[in-house]
Length: 412
Length: 143
Image 1 (cartoon, rainbow over the protein chains, first blue to last red):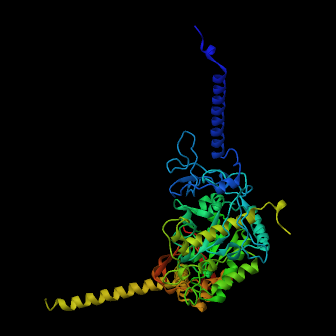
Image 2 (cartoon, each protein chain N blue to C red):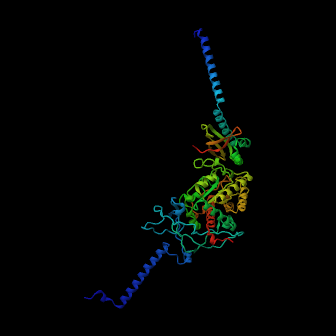
């Protein structure tokens, strides 16, 4: 009886050979695709990705991440909505990033710097061309190590970042010095805080990013920096209080008596509790004494500098012709930032693009927003939403300026 | 009532009144002559006076009652409630803690900002005697 091998004639063998080759190629392709998907190997061609149609944005997928263990250990997981790309499967088959199976994010150490916000050189205020950067394709996984071409937004509501964020080379040098000093003092490199009045009270400031899922839309490149400061987004500063004035910040009476020591000022208490490396300063709504405001603000900024905490000054939304809200204090803030070479987030410029400059009927407090989703058109009309996005951009840029390796710095 | 008893009752009432007056006088005399009690009263008065001046933004009294150690902070103290309206103290009761240089107060300061009322609970304060006068010298750790 003939064996099966005896049935092999040449056409059959060729067909079988072709079949085996096709199957092998298929397996290899699938394996390769899987590795690319898991970011184990880089994307072969960035242009191909940019041209590929993006999956629909459901806004529902979410992952959890942890802050760098060295600086933020113990912080609760941080949940963020992905922008467009579905999450890869986690070991065991469960979808990574689902709300039920939070997956810690790879630490984003200061040495491995994520994509920086475009920074201006002195005197430059023009929109920069899109640059090569590292863009996370999936929140919850480390960003692709291969730089990919991406159109990193250079403006918010048409106002270029270089225009509303003053971070000149001179300022960057100061930032680096302050940050370096702060690290020697033991400040937490993964912590920021805020000092402010009712404009940013009530959980309306950066806490919004820590309250649940969010979608950064085109600004997803900011995610790695957010991962560094995970716990700060979940915390409310003791130095944010309704009715706070610039001159109250150095006054123990205004300090939270449940958390602060006797005779401890508002700023000293907050710095002791949080040990921040960066502080947003948003004051002036209540300060109707310009001279005292100037003096008090300079005292606050100098206190931060001496404590090794990089101050990021913020101007307030200013309605044209407004007589309330002490919008004239913005000029004082700009002057102080310029005099002391510290970062300035001139939010008033961005707010000017919004209906009623992004403030409500009282002319002081910013308009709110429901869902933290920067793909929604409504968000781009909200004062608080753009304020928070602008602040995030400022934090990202300032953080990168601060943590730049001195040996490869851009020092002239 | 028996008419014979009326003078007796009147006499008893008069004696009682006199006794009470006498006791009060003795007590007052005793307090006035007790240096410890005097100091306690003066320290308490300094703190209460200082807190009242603070909410009233009375720069003169604030400077008078501020101890020399805190003179550099006088401006900060004077402007504590600058920008707020209707700053006031409610339910203030202050007592010196034993023979210490601490006066403990209960009650609160309320200062309005727009439609919001900011509340600042009163606490313990350090006092210091300078040139015979008790002065407010900042907050004391809560015991």
